Image (cartoon, rainbow, N blue to C red):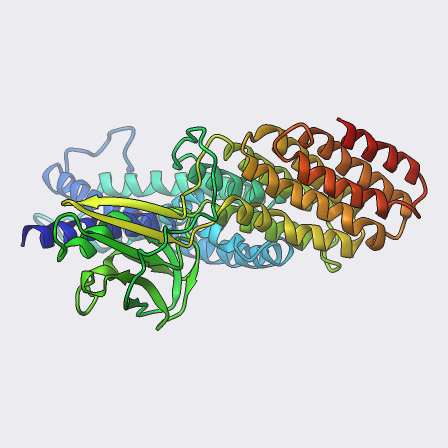
Length: 493
């Protein structure tokens, strides 16, 4: 019973964290909170007006008009705020739609999650609500025949209106800033780096994303936990899942859990979320195990740093498309991708095989997570293809420059192999894909510069084999002798 309560508490904690992140990025939560706050504030100022009615007249910092002028002021403030709010946000949405068509559809998500936008919307709505509440009590008969004039409340409403005027100017400047390409790519970069910084430090051990489970652990029939709904896995709580599957096992037992889709992956309803060996380790209905998975309509940065690389790649691809043709924005996005991957240098990616021990039961997980080759491919493969298609030599040169710096920054052979594979692909395609053969020659020489460095590492046999192929590709290129001389230098180094 106590273990069941602990599992429910762990599941509730994970879902609460995901809910809080979702609320923080929603357009309505902060404005709703601000509106609720001004309702409480109105209660305070109304109470002060009731208690001090008649004794506040003449104070220099308070509104000094009659009840009729108070009602007129409050009505004007309310009507003006709603008009400005509706017009401004309507125009802003149109501008955002145009910008999202040029850069990325995910710009709307950034706009909705922006604290500045949420604060302005909340201030306008809160001021409108406060003015309406004050208007409702202004002019009512108080003690005797005198009409009630809430001077403190009207003064606060006036101050709020003046603040809204300042926020209007801020909002125009802020929106004009966040729809610029530099701001868009910077936001995606910041979100990605924040997620990277939550990864554990790399301890120097060699990564191997292809590591598989030892043989014999997946014996017999597996219990299958299927997805109830379609969506992206935003959060996966392996600790909670380990508690669920180990609950019915004896001490010293071993449970194997295969999770095909880790954070960031899409799962369709009815497909397996997890397979468990032995089958008896999973509860009969699998109800408890579902609590380890949190789904959403789109990917989240909570456990998925690669989501930012996907966004930056989309922006770069938009810039390279024939309809937009904006290579500068594409290279801005690539600059930010380099920064994310440099931040990843000292961080360890989640391993494919992970273990937990719960109550003497060993739980072994095999999770479908991104390894470094997947990450580099997500960042650069589509950009490389688009750059060749559009003939953007500068983008390809920038790509090779990034790969060179990443290869020198990473000490892992596994990571360097993934980077060299992308550089070699550029060299293999350049002679046949480039319209100008001189451009192809220059790209081959840049690739050989990367190869010259990697030939002095553990990758030497692979690099030497590949540069021989590069030499063969250069036979019909102008300046091919320079390429062959460079390949000979790499082989001899």
